[in-house]
Image (cartoon, rainbow, N blue to C red; front, side, top):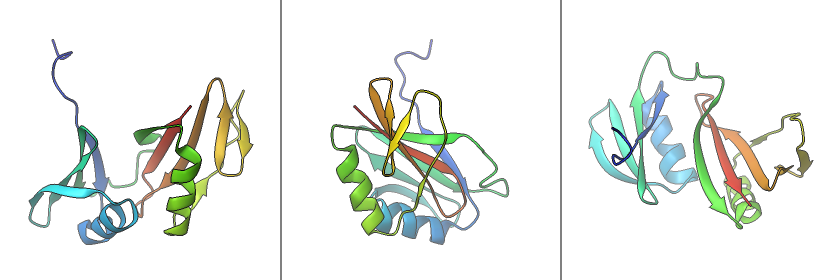
Length: 125
């Protein structure tokens, strides 16, 4: 039923202005639509990301959004680090860490958090 419909990633934040500085300034996303002080939708490749104000912001302890970076993951990590992003380090089975990038199982991944503690990921090959 849903296989032909686009999905929209959704992130809850406490302060939309703080979130906008991060998602626009740090991550470089472009707003597609703004709904006042309550929500903003960003374009990201051929998909979109909805960032909205909620009292439950930052309560998700799992990855909320993953960007598929391809072969450029190390470059993306270095660019984000230069913009002040701090990457998370996890002890995961079958993955070894090379700097901030976890490598193994024919993939590379790096995780970081937004200002509300939402976990975001970059995945490459």
